[in-house]
Image 1 (cartoon, rainbow, N blue to C red):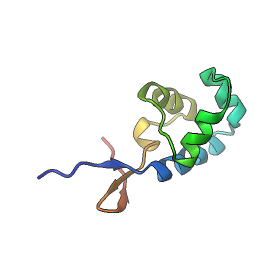
Image 2: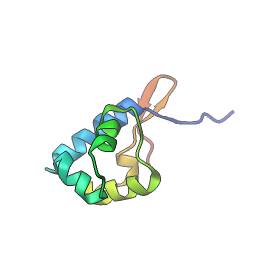
Image 3: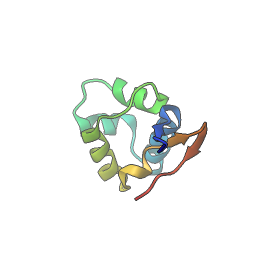
Image 4: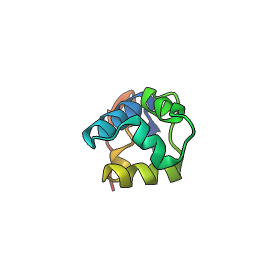
Length: 85
């Protein structure tokens, strides 16, 4: 049976925060990019309590200048794995 990868939400959140910081972008600036009224969604992404929607992942990838698969962290059998095309 094929194993299905699972997104590690906590590790993905940490990765989003790391990529944001590396890009030199504040939470407020990212909030403005998305047109959000509050930064709560971004903080939820970074804490790993929520994931960005697919369309928001596309924007994040463009802003961070990475591929979507460089944002998401997957887990297989309890271990983090990187899945790339």
